[in-house]
Amino acid sequence: MVERQHSSLSMVCQCQLLNLHRSGLYYQPCQESEDNLAIMRLLDEQYFQTPFYGVRRITVWLRSQGYDINRKRVKRLMDLMGWQTIYRKPNTSKPNKENRLYPYLLKGLNINRVNQVWEMDITYVPMRKGFMYLCAVIDVHTRYVLNWSVSNNMTAEWCTQVVEEAVEQYGAPEILNTDQGSQFTSEVFIELIKSKGILPSMDGRGRAIDNIFIERLWKTVKYEHVYLRSPQDGVELYKGLNDYFIFYNTRRPHQSLGYVTPATNFLKQMAA
Image 1 (cartoon, one colour):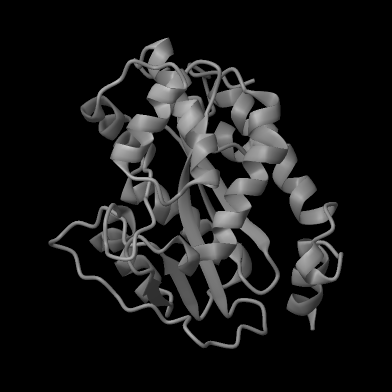
Image 2 (cartoon, one colour):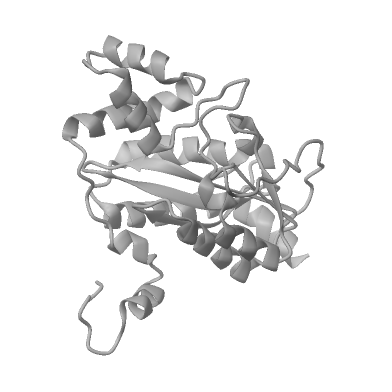
């Protein structure tokens, strides 16, 4: 489908014509063992059941599942996945201490229109052999998925590209809410959103409920698509997610929206 040595079209042009993100094509299978990948798949599913478990409890739980594993190995795998344990006190979000943090702006805010508040996050996605990361931006009022991408690295440049493409297509929101991860506190990311006139808002560390709408999206995507399909590689993952997000936006009735689709809600209000 994509020719790396095409005589006249660059990789960038080919991806633009096919509406593909280049990150999916550059995917290289990770070097984790089959055993580690199986554990990470279990952890990914368990997070939705017990997001308040830390390293110690997860280690005990994995041992109860038959794995002879120590705490050091569990912590490494949890860090690799980006697991953020929910605690009363700050814990596992990973900001860069040199970067500035911004206050949480959504407390008590009446979100009642499109492009008022967007939320953005990254999640781990397991495959049959290896894993990738999924980044998405949603409009909070309508739950519409504005843009998404997959990559094998969680870089600030990647996240910046995802939100920049969403702004180019739909205009800039008033507020963009993220967690305190180093990608979202980075200079390149903050400079972009400020240049678009967007106010940055950041969750309290360890408080997944601050970004609840996109956390619900991750659970929906994984239980309705990823866990059922188990994609073989990055290209298969991208194609499957592309089909799923079209379904999610345009054909899946949303209970909180009165059983209309996010696209119906979003596009209707954009046209008003």
